[in-house]
Image (cartoon, rainbow, N blue to C red; front, side, top):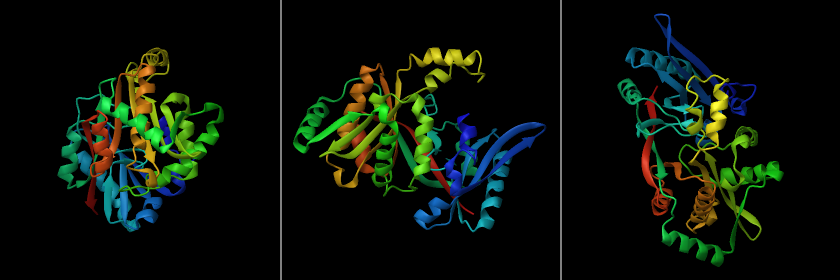
Length: 334
C-alpha cells in the first residue's frame, strides 16, 4: 500500500514537481523486471544540472533484461534534455535510495532498500560508475560510551540546551517545527533537494501510526528549536512473519510480532548550521539511545550518512556505532 501511494500522482505531492514513467519487462509470459524513469524538476532547480533519475529497479539475474530496462529509462529521459542517469532513487533522495553493495547478509530495515548482490554486476556491466556511497551504522549494545554520558551532561548545562519528546496532542504544530528545521539542517548536503511543505505533511501522515513519541526528540535553546531527531521501530521485524503478504490472517501475525520489535532505526537527525560541532548531535543521540533502551530496544541503525560527511561519520563512531552496510548511488552519461 505504501508503494502504491508513493507511485500515485493523486496522493504523492512529489508529482507536483516531477514526472515519472514506469516500465515493466516481460519474457516468455513472465514478468521479469521493472524500472521507473524520473525527471525531478525540484532537483534541477536546486542544482542547476541536467540529471535524470531511475528508481524502483527490480530484475531477474539476466543482463539482457536489466539492459532493456535501463535503455527504456534512458530513451524516456534523453529527449527531455537530461545528460546523466542517476540512481537508484525511489523516487528521490528523500525516499528509499541507493543500491546495497555491502551488507547483503543483514536483514532489510524500515524504509531502506534491499537487493540481491547480483544487482551490482547488472549495474556495472551496463556502464554505471559510482557517484557517491551512503554509509549505514549499527549499534548492538545498550550501553553508551561513558565519556559520552559525561559529555552530554556538561554540554546541556553549559550551553543551556534542553531536550523534549514529541507531543502527539499537538502533532500538527510539531510537524510545522520540523518544516522550519528540515531544509536548513540539510541544505549543504550533496544531492539534497528541499522537501516542500506538502511533502513533509505527507511523510508525517504516513509515519504517524508507527511513531513512538519518546523517540522523536527536539533540542531547544532559549525557547528556540535548534535540532531534532526521529527514530522509528523497525517494523520489518514484524512484517517478515507474513511472507505471503496477505491481509488475513497475515495482519494478525504482524500485529502480534509488532509488540516484540527490539530493533530501532534512527531515520533523521539534523541540527541548524550555527549549532553544529557544538555537541547537540550527541545530546540527540543520547536521548534516542536512553529512551530506546527504556522501551526495550536493544539494536539500533543510524544512517544513511554520506561517505564524505566526516563530521557525522566520526560522531557515529564516537557514539559507539560501527559501519555495517554500504549503499551506492550510480551515474551514467546518457
